[in-house]
Image (cartoon, rainbow, N blue to C red):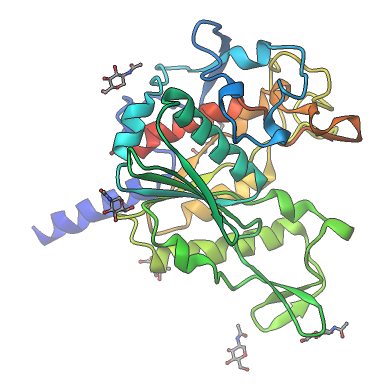
Length: 347
Ligand SMILES: *[C@@H]1O[C@H](CO)[C@@H](O)[C@H](O)[C@H]1NC(C)=O
Ligand SMILES: *[C@@H]1O[C@H](CO)[C@@H](O)[C@H](O)[C@H]1NC(C)=O
Ligand SMILES: *[C@@H]1O[C@H](CO)[C@@H](O)[C@H](O)[C@H]1NC(C)=O
Ligand SMILES: *[C@@H]1O[C@H](CO)[C@@H](O)[C@H](O)[C@H]1NC(C)=O
Ligand SMILES: *[C@@H]1O[C@H](CO)[C@@H](O)[C@H](O)[C@H]1NC(C)=O
Ligand SMILES: *[C@@H]1O[C@H](CO)[C@@H](O)[C@H](O)[C@H]1NC(C)=O
């Protein structure tokens, strides 16, 4: 008997750790993340961005005069099944009395805004309250008693400013995490800021255990930070109460190493193939697989890689001066991330 219990708990642990175990998702073994984009102008876009008054200018491509519209009309088609339609009422009811928080950089902001637009557009009469406390934006629907929060934190680990003005990246420290633990659902994201060097790099020194240094390969720093986060989840988060997700690395299309397209400028259709392997994503998967607690990977890297057409390009915040092949137009690709989140969320 004892042996069976141990075996069962080992199995469930393995299952829990298997971060993209779609069998657990009730989709009969269909991998929701493998598939293709199909043109579907009957159901897509899922909402009209002009009915979403709180959307940030940088994502509001139509308002910024993007002329082509096909990018709005692609639906993600998994190979072995259909992605369930999004029913905003059911989603809100699932989250009644709950708080969902996105923690990360502007790609998190992108997903948070997509979700709040999807929910608002489905019930535009329902009152919403949008407020900001410190670094946290809180979007509440009193009718459903649901809250969707956005906590800006690009590195997850801390950056502290010393008395002499030196900014120290503390790879072992996660001081913002006390707030995160209170949530019912957490969706993390990390990576893009690790690439920044020179003036865009927001720290001067790295503190790693007892040693301090100026810099190291960015994938190395990123992995150390992710490990600090993973240790925190394993030791502090009760994942039977708080569901933890990690957003896979969102692919850029702004350099020659990017998948198939050197740039997103002028791209109006999805790419036919994607070749580039994102090392950042492999590092993330390695860290997640090493964890003891159940964490869900929102494995959006590859499916988004096809969508060089989905970025704001010159129709974001900066026109040609500051073209954007990193974020995503809303409505658009990120809405699909939320459809996937909806399935993984279960309840
Ligand atoms: C994520 O998706 C990619 C490509 O679709 C796949 O190769 C990889 O194994 C997936 N990761 C996990 C953890 O399932
Ligand atoms: C969404 O779900 C609710 C409750 O299950 C149902 O009444 C409603 O018809 C659904 N809406 C759509 C558009 O399918
Ligand atoms: C709304 O949800 C919060 C938790 O987020 C809970 O404390 C509160 O009691 C709920 N209010 C109602 C009216 O259900
Ligand atoms: C600032 O202080 C830190 C230690 O607190 C030290 O490592 C660093 O060298 C100092 N920087 C300058 C510019 O003096
Ligand atoms: C850091 O230094 C402290 C005190 O000197 C020591 O106890 C600890 O083992 C060191 N930690 C590491 C990781 O080297
Ligand atoms: C994860 O599990 C292993 C094996 O049971 C254990 O040695 C390790 O301390 C655990 N890590 C955490 C952070 O709980």
